[in-house]
Length: 91
Image (cartoon, rainbow, N blue to C red; front, side, top):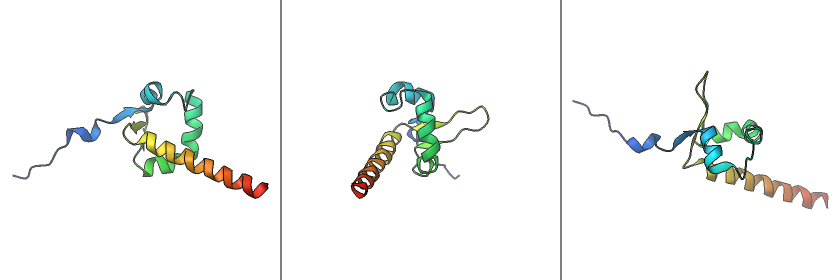
């Protein structure tokens, strides 16, 4: 008989975006609209990195609480460096 390996922890880090915003991301995204604006601009990267799982129909979006913070931080750092580069070119 073939046994399918199970890892109960694989889904443990997933949580609805609203819960993540309330518990962990309020300083960076103080309103749901601020998250939506960020998500809209970076949705593909967030999904590709495994940090965001898009909902369908009534199912909400989920985030991997173990990954989302690092991915958001990397995006913010990259955008900050890009602004520095643009400021240096403009100066």
